[in-house]
Length: 115
Ligand SMILES: Cc1cc2nc3c(=O)[nH]c(=O)nc-3n(C[C@H](O)[C@H](O)[C@H](O)COP(=O)(O)OP(=O)(O)OC[C@H]3O[C@@H](n4cnc5c(N)ncnc54)[C@H](O)[C@@H]3O)c2cc1C
Image (cartoon, helix red, strand yellow):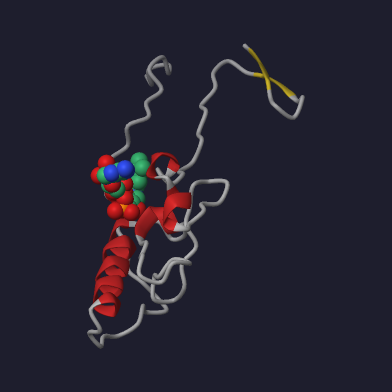
């Protein structure tokens, strides 16, 4: 198989795995109507309280980018909610826990059987 990349580079390989990464699902939200704009990957900019550039609109989770983990997204949501309702709370910890929940789903079907 010969792959032609957008850069013009050609890759010759037996198999290819194409991974596009994650992007915010903001295309259909009509962000300009709310006074907002997403970056090239559909992400929203927020400040340390998870307020977007329109201060009464908050954003948390994958749509704001790194670290894009389940546990951190949930904590961001809690902190944003507390800020929105004027509830005093701790800030985001410098170190955060994370767990890997996914089981391996990519298999090499035609790998030779070991003897
Ligand atoms: C393959 C994979 C494996 C991962 N493994 C791990 C892991 O092991 N550990 C870990 O911590 N994190 C993992 N993550 C990351 C984790 O899943 C995300 O960081 C987390 O789910 C982000 O939460 P979220 O609420 O921001 O977004 P999501 O969980 O994606 O929730 C967004 C929700 O909004 C809905 N939605 C979108 N657009 C609209 C709209 N216009 N109107 C209404 N609803 C809308 C979507 O349907 C969705 O239900 C993994 C992610 C992927 C893709």
